[in-house]
Length: 359
Image (cartoon, rainbow, N blue to C red; front, side, top):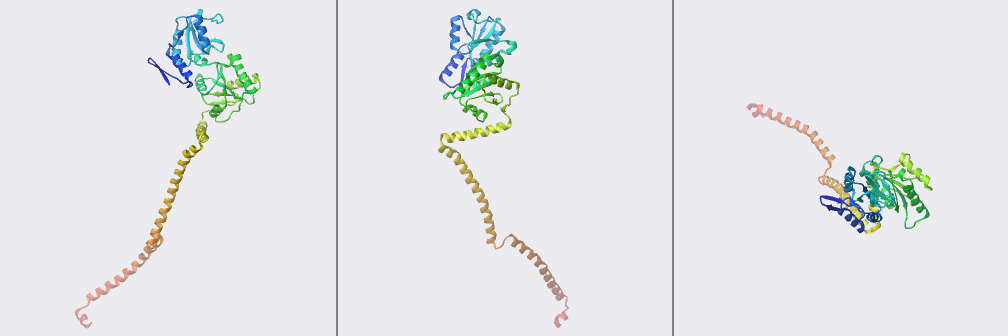
């Protein structure tokens, strides 16, 4: 789905629900950067949006860059601008102008030297630190370049262990943001079906898994996570490269992916409609089997027909060769007899008339 705005076209990649599509349309319909003229307006948008970006200050090169980034990423989130007096007293900025993101009940200021380009920083920070994750969200998280740490749980039959793992992940996201927020996105996923299809295996529920969406690798704790310290150690081992990585996008994994997808498709068809599955896969196999049988029997029939033809002619290939050899042996004898008859005729011609009278 795309939204046209003047000469700009925005592609929508989010969930296909009515509310999400309307939200997308409203977001891209207005200006890329919306002005907040008062404290009341700031409080209103802060309550309405879980994540929002705000430029604070007057005209500057940073504002020009901010407008450029907003025009690019408005499909994902909201961008606002205001003066410093619009902000509540609890928000303290060390310098102006500044770009601030408000989320998770707090705010974080962009630092060009530590955070790199403004576009990359906005792309990393446009999600809450901890959030529910589904297929669409995981696809969008892949564009941030972060590793995705997921607590795989069963929300319908929630257990104490599921709640404990979700709580541990949330604590890492909030209490250890400075250490891990640059490299990790945290969340939980209901059920393991989607994860199983990604890794072409099976993850137990509840459990914790870290996904690298850029190269399809994943990491699993060496043993069940029991406390926060154990979870922090697992995250650190992933960052320093000591944790073993599974999966990947190598040639073997690609072949495995093709086979896995084919098997999954066949199994899903048979689970939904066994009769349809038998028809779709049984009919082509039956036709191919009949064709192979026809080709094999046709070759056998041609050989039998040739043999029968030779028999009807009265001889086989061997008998024909023997007949040719006998003719070659008889030919010299015939030639000799013909020679003797020629000599007798010559003698008769040479007799004198007196000899003929005597005869």
